[in-house]
Image 1 (cartoon, rainbow, N blue to C red):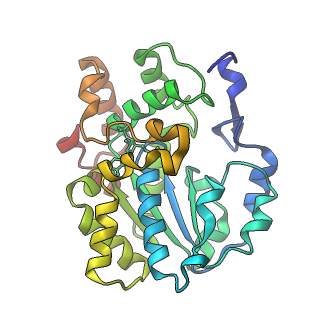
Image 2 (cartoon, protein in one colour):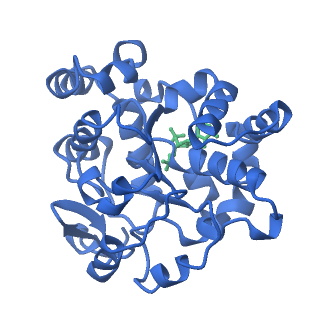
Amino acid sequence: AKGKKPEELLVMYKGVLYPSGMCSPETFQALDIMEVRKDDVFLVAYPKCGTNWVRHILNDLTSAVSKNKEEVPPTEHIQMLEFGVPGKFQKIKSFPSPRVFTTHLHYDNIPKAVFGTKAKVLVVFRNPKDAAVSYYHFYNKNPGLPNVSSWDEFFQKFMSGEVCWSSYFDHALAWNKHMDEENIMIITYEEMKENLLGRVKQIAEFLGFSLPEEKIQSIAENATFESMSNKSQETHGKFGSIFFRKGTVGDWKNLFTEAQSQEMDAKFEECLAGTKLGARLKYDKYC
Ligand code: A3P
């Protein structure tokens, strides 16, 4: 984007790249000392792995358990935890429980208090080939991100981690070590595509929410790609079409060359083959 040099649009904090227009060192400092409640819910995802999808489900689930509709936590309005002004952390203190926070932060940069309480952490992953393709389109359409001249250029940046929130593989490696911890749940984009109703149920159980079957069903119906993209103007304004593009598994086949596919396979083999998260991603099936 869009008139600025790429390096002006990115800022490094604790070894990870961020969009400089959205993130500031002051916000990171305030985030570090954020107060966490035991019934907070943190949604963590590498970009383009299904953040908005799961956030929508979480908002519907928390609305359904809130006694008073008017008291539904307004946390969706604060966007990503790492975006915006530090003053927002003061505002967050008055939000009713259960609060839902969304972030793309690397495991190491998530406030330590999150893991020291009983707060729930839901982590979303997607096969890296589809995540890369989705990210490429997002880079080109989002005015806050640097322009990339071609898919080939973006692919190399993705592989070397020179993109916002840095390397997909670093995120995956970090979470792989924490998959079995209490209060952490991993879910994948592909699992949600395969069985949305089952996953919504599983998320509700993880959060300890007991809801009637019909409610779970209607939440799942409202979370299909069709339903969410139809409402995207309402929920995301003019950015709707940027966030809801295709919503499929396997779109990588339309952009990856054979050589790029092999390069990603080798990277996956090197980093994630034989790991628990690697197995959950079912790389062989989807890539
Ligand atoms: P594509 O670009 O492959 O279509 P994020 O929310 O993390 O930015 O991820 C965006 C990706 O999730 C986009 O992928 C988007 O279309 C997809 N997505 C959003 N809502 C979805 C839904 N309800 N079902 C399936 N995919 C969805």
